[in-house]
Amino acid sequence: MAAEEPTTRRVLVAEHPRLLKLKEMFNSKFGSTPKFYVRAPGRVNIIGEHIDYCGYSVLPMAVEQDMLIAVEPVETHTLQLANTNPLYPDFSTSANNIHIDKTKPVWHNYFLCGFKGIQEHFGLSKLTGMNCLVDGNIPPGSGLSSSSALVCCAGLVTLTVLGMSLSKVELAEICAKSERYIGTEGGGMDQSISFLAEEGTAKLIEFSPLRATDVKLPSGAVFVIANSCVEMNKAATSHFNLRVMECRLAAKVLAKHKGLQWDKVLRLEEVQTQLGISLEEMLLVTEDALHAEPYSREEICKCLGISVEELRTQILSPNTQDELTFKLYQRAKHVYSEAARVLQFKQVCEEAPANAVQLLGELMNQSHRSCRDMYECSCPELDQLVDICRKFGARGSRLTGAGWGGCTVSIVPTDMLPSFLTNVHAAYYQRSSSRLALEKHSLFATKPGGGALVFLEA
Image (cartoon, rainbow, N blue to C red; front, side, top):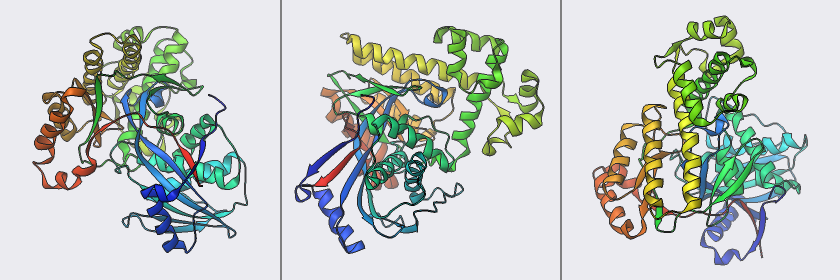
């Protein structure tokens, strides 16, 4: 799998309504025909929230919703970007002078991240220009990874225009790294599943080295995505980056407590690996070493034997330098328990006992409780939606994606699906006109989809 490249497929555009519509819009926009098309899917993370950037495995699957880009390389060195959605304005820039403004999470910056990632990987200075028309049907801010799908799509577009080749794993790693140009310290799950997904199977994604293993989901249930209709833009928020920093500080304080070389430690997983103990034992160490009250900067400095100035300049990121308190115990407890739940989830899928759906549902419920109480990344609407989903037959329901809004994912016995959809629609969406307006894309059963592709016209 390691060396496998993204698939290129020949298609009759006339037989694909969405491609055909995109081709026609491209023609009226640029007065020419696309040379090729690229798609990259969004994803739903079934379990394993906020642990990829701590070094732990996660368990997502690709959804059918995706980013689709029509592309025409041009002789000029100009990058012209347009979007089928009128809310997203056109943008053009020199291909040789890419500037990404971290302060503004505008749509085209995600394209530029993927473009720049490939450009820098190959050390290229003179780049060909291109006309691109982007069409996305992943709801933005829904936690289904629309922004990472756009980064991945742009990376594969750029690679294809250059006529270069990379494996799916290399592409995923480059796109994960390049998304940080926008100021989000993500962990790499979203880009990995976008490239490594395969139809019909979820994936256990492990990091350093990046690899993906098939996880066969139980046949008697479906996974249903429900959007809370609360939008959350993780690049624009300090919540996300504060959590990343709290996990890093917890890792350093735990390492110091255990006599490890704490200044080299960045992730909670490294502490476990260096101690050579289980996740369950790591939870006991957390109970022993950390207290539940928030830590002040001064207390962290005292624990580590450094000055506040050193903490600010050497450890805290620019967007967390002004934070005064950090919750270390709660964040570490969530990460170690959630990492254990991912492995238990995979084990239940492999062993496939008669009560698999019940067991998986319970793990998803535990995950939501931990996200809500320990990681504090839920919101009232998500909690309400999770309760409604459970009330109407979901065996398990949890927030998915970064949280603070976005979607829930629920495991629902197949025979209960029609009544589940009807009841959740009535209880959550019909009660609010703003949600009802968004409802078309907000509640749907999903099955594992395939990964990023290049389409050539046959």
